[in-house]
Picture (cartoon, rainbow, N blue to C red):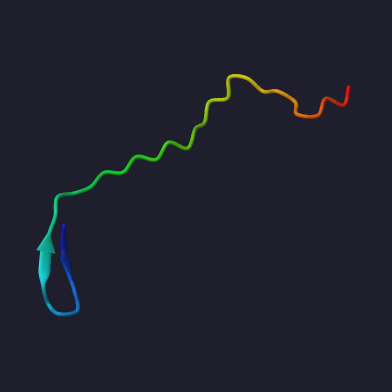
Length: 36
């Protein structure tokens, strides 16, 4: 990956892999107000 700023400076960096876990495991659900 190559990035160039407004001054013309070029910076090279290694590729970055980002993994976002959007699955949230809910093992136990409790009611805050148990209405019966």
